[in-house]
Length: 118
Image (cartoon, rainbow, N blue to C red; front, side, top):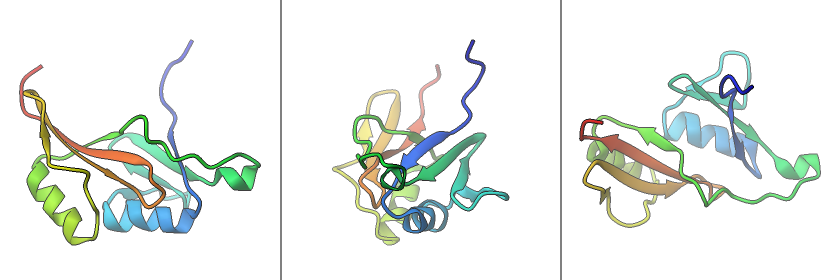
């Protein structure tokens, strides 16, 4: 029945601010045809403003999209220099490294690097 993932919705109170964060700060690839969509590899992320659609804004703090990086400490240092604040130290699970942070609306995100084979 379900054949794929079309996009991941990112709730925001200010779509322009969110776009600047995801595209300018994180360096994600903007979509060629939509101002408020950007790409992480082959996955589209779409910014939407729930309050403009009669819905309550609630930041996603329960799940963390894992944004792959090859060198987590270098990526973290670069983002910290751009003003991104991380929650605690980089976490080593014994399989991967994770560094947790949030976008300007409080949506949870993480940098992720798996170093152990599957």
